[in-house]
Image (cartoon, rainbow, N blue to C red; front, side, top):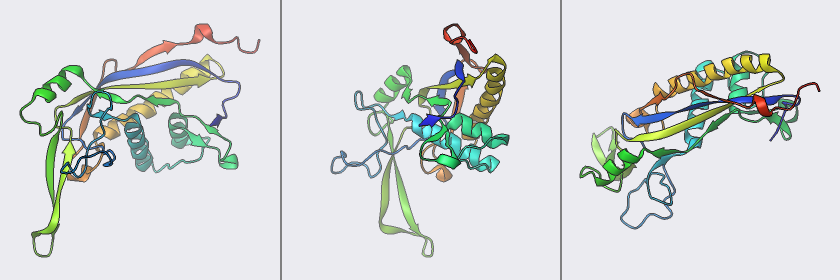
Amino acid sequence: MTHSREGKHIFRKVKFAGTLTLKTGLHIGDSKESVEIGGVDSPVVRRKDNNQPYIPGSSLKGKMRCLIEQTTGKFHKFHTQSGEGKWISELFGSQDESNANKNGLSSCLIVRDADMEKNKAEEFLKSPHTDMPYTEIKFENTIDRFRGVTVQGGIRQIERVPAGAVFKVEFLINIWGADKAEADTNQTKLVATFKQAIKLLQEDYLGGSGSRGYGQVEIKFDNEEGEILDYTSILPKINE
């Protein structure tokens, strides 16, 4: 996407690294195409190299944007120039309403895929309480609410990453500006918007079936204010 930040530079990145701990079981689904006969009805997404469950960055980022837009009432497919919506557009990216096919804002926020923390992964792999490598199977019934009985054929097997699993998370925010003063202002606004989205995520849920108890998470950062990755020394001279 072509962005409308001509004349501006990335002065720095703010990195938030830490852990995401599951308070309840998590289901982020994968395709069933490779599931064997007799397997679960709804498998979780796993890495292809080591078969460990992971949390896609797209799942985290999409849920964060959804929640902050729902909470503020600012739904911005297109870029806005003022108010809360401006910073949602800046952080998550947007299109230019006047020329949606060409211009817009690239996302300032980078969200890495979250892998299982090594020690917890080993613990879950060896655990006698898991049903599959690293995961549990939860049986869910479809109930006929008029008769209060299970519908025939209405039992499903849902694969979940169990409560207690820990994932390593990393978020980076690109701080743009025409000069240092603008970059500083942008950093304050973008970090505040990011922190609000993280807070909302912890008060809601991640993945599927959250209204039935799945996906409650707790996120802790190594540095609550973020680590500054300063690019000032490699910036071209402005107004040279």
